[in-house]
Length: 300
Image 1 (cartoon, rainbow, N blue to C red):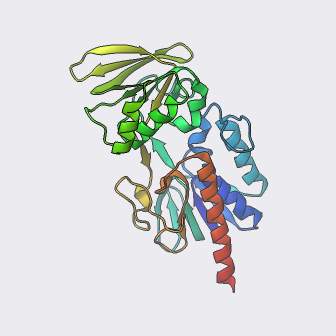
Image 2 (cartoon, rainbow, N blue to C red):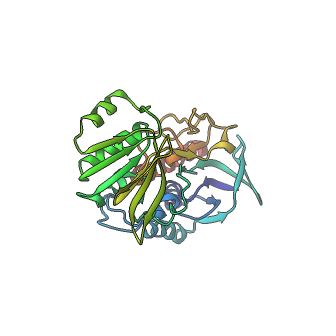
Image 3 (cartoon, rainbow, N blue to C red):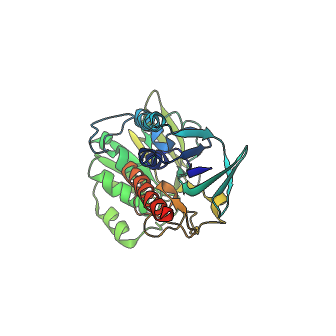
């Protein structure tokens, strides 16, 4: 029996554990793959307050080590079900807690191209606000047609010399105000009805190949490619205990509370306006603080 079971060992889950352990609570973290979440793939993190520069792997490892130093238990098992009574069932065991924190994050939707993983952090990114500053006065491309892609293109237009905005359809599905702003920027070139079909380069991304709806191909020389075609949250196994919106994200109230008492959602897996490292650790600390307060109320 644990005080708190945390599902997911990314920044949100580990921060939640850190705060709980410092309050002398019994915590078990369940993680399906590796600690650290998506941030481990970032070659450089330069927008986290107080840290000038650190690799995503080092950031995650430092946080992981903090949790271990406080006696945190991380078990590598896949959660297959969570019940309303805070029973957590994995592929190997069953655990019971007074509180459960869902911190499973979301995976970036990928293009599915052969060299995509090779160039990740070497010219290819899924987060313009995280990595855009590395492309001062360079030529970059953004793929996507929703608000995220439009906002990424606008953000990058303030940094890069030129931005290609590539969309597979003949019109954007984002908000009209963003579309007008994009169209007004001199250094944004919109390419409709095209898909990126190949990536090229030696150690760094140097070129992309796009193909239009008629099959005609064209090479673009770019130093950066930002993929903004959505994320895929991993919340399917929780739909019996939480409300999930049409995009698969957990609906919360008062920031981290779900519809089920004693079950919280933190990080990129929940509905929120910004998904960043800072907001992930913020969620984790908020959930831990709320749990500590609620545990105190229960003990009275």
